[in-house]
Image (cartoon, rainbow, N blue to C red; front, side):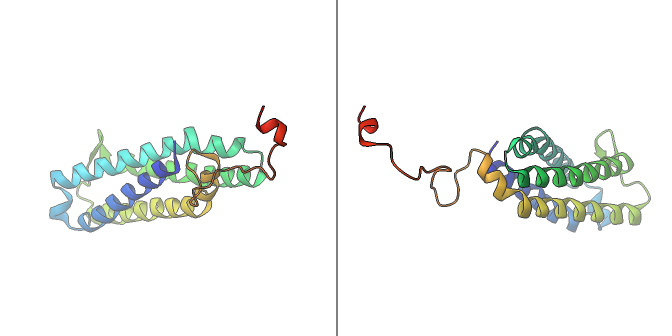
Length: 163
């Protein structure tokens, strides 16, 4: 996993959220095949993002020697579990067999969908602000300056450099 993959995941989810946020309130657009396809893509991206965090990001931060990383990962995991539970409840309410099913309760569906978009966006923004700098240090991406993560303070003695 790289920081770039996390950032790309965030970008895709944000893009889908923006497009779906415009489509969902319109009853005639909400029920189209295209909206359902985009919604399915949104759900898949969110679930993959959750898995990426659970399997790679959080364990990396929890293993780090610096307790600031551990505390940040624990806070993020708690928030992550909360949004994941809400997301699963939302899907249980508004999707049947993986397909968007707003039924006759359009107003409630729109309200719940806008809230889930807001919560997912907030979680992604919080992750970007709180975890990405830490993730840059523990994942395979080099820092923005292109310098290596570790630079020795002094060179090896001359005899060791030429051995």
